[in-house]
View: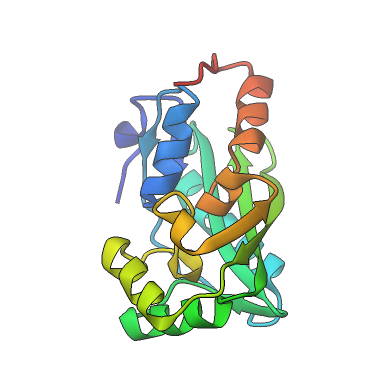
Length: 200
C-alpha cells in the first residue's frame, strides 16, 4: 500500500495497472507515477455506463484516500455488446468466445475517467466509441490470440496491437478504445494549470 511519501514524486497519479493507459498518458508529455488501486470491481450486466463509472470512482476514491494531496486520474473500460456488459476474459477460452461473438458485428467501448484534485469534488466523464469487427474465421481469432495477450483487455483485444487483423472500422476516440481518452485528459491537464502538455 502506498504512503503519502510514496505518492510525492510527481503531482500526478495514474491509478491504474494498465500499460495502455500509461502509454497514452506518457504521450502527453507529463510526469506521473503509477499507483495500483486495490478495489473490488463491480459489474452491472445490463448497464455498461454504470459499471465503468462505479469502478472508476472506486479506484479514484481508493487512491485519493492514500495520496490526498495529489491529482489523480482513474479509469475503467467496459464494452456494451447488444445491451450486455463485456469485461476482461478470465481465460483463453472465454477470450476466444468473446472475439467470435464480435465477428461481423458492432459494439460500443465505454471508458469512465475520474479526475480528482485536492480539496475539490471528483470530476467524472464517460466517453463512448464504436467498433466494427471484421467477419472472422476461427483460425484468424486463434492467430490474433497467439500474437496478442487478450486476458488483460476489455473485450479480449487491443486496437493498438494488430488491430488490423480483427477490426473493420471504428468511430470516436481511438485512445478511448485503448482505455483512456487522451483528449479528455489533455483538457483536464491544461485546465488544472499545473502541467505543461507537450506531445511526445
